[in-house]
Length: 414
Ligand SMILES: Cc1ncc(COP(=O)(O)O)c(C=O)c1O
Image (cartoon, rainbow, N blue to C red; front, top):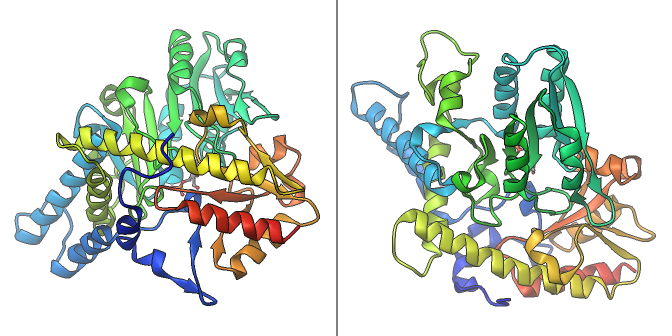
């Protein structure tokens, strides 16, 4: 396992202006990446440049509108490379993952009949649960729940065959839990679901900054993520197999495009954020020390990021085990770090999650507490009415020194 990143961490950190922030005289420690990452300077520059140079709505026969068209197309190509989609028309932008999922749940529900079934999981963020549950209610469709093992917070894929049958229309599953960091064996889910004739909608919001994505290898039908979780601005990006985007009925106004992706993109997009999308993907590709296509450089960079983050997980878990009263939820086996992101939900005896987050916050260490919309996870763990858990999340710009800082701050509370 590499304990040093394959890139110069100090140089990387200097590219993120926010990482220089000082709170109460101490350099801020951003361990809130699962709630949204910071952005490097090229993303800030790209967004500012779009706004400064003169923008316009899309599709007009004049300079600023044509410029906007190129910005949108560049962003589509960037996410196509990041997700490894087959063509740019398979990428749909929207306000965020939640809004995109509401739109697609309504569209897919048009194809469901009363008595059909769908499957959601208890490991998911509510954005990949409630839109489907509401759509199912509208169409008298039965919702089945896939459980996770509360001892290590991994999905019980052994139970999936028992939930699937010829009436199953959809499996909505997270690629990685935004609460406890467990990574799902998505190819296995897709294989089982497809065998039963069901489609698969993957929530990749939490996974996206932590490892390479490949929708073709996954063979999922849909995959949604949010660029603000992988070093860009606030915009959602959904992949759908072209055949689905083409075939499914969209709720849209006249006279918007009847073709994908335009038929799925309601209203005016956040063009400045789309300018930032390309810059964010290019930033990740720039971490690669290989040459080659952007896709190849992205795979290299994300693979190295995953490896480096595993070393942060190792370091954190080793230290956490020595702090009395600190309980880590999710995978704690350091031999199995490949199956988790460096996102840790923890409790500390004698303190509420809110108190821990507040004490750390006073020291400039930013962590979340509560359920972070992973409502079903907290319910399953019996923590929903106990204030949830403290969430400590690392990304590639975090250092081993920051792991030590949060461990020391937690130890000082005991
Ligand atoms: C795993 C996961 N899914 C979905 C969402 C919702 O994303 P958005 O804010 O883009 O709607 C989040 C946000 O925290 C998340 O972590």
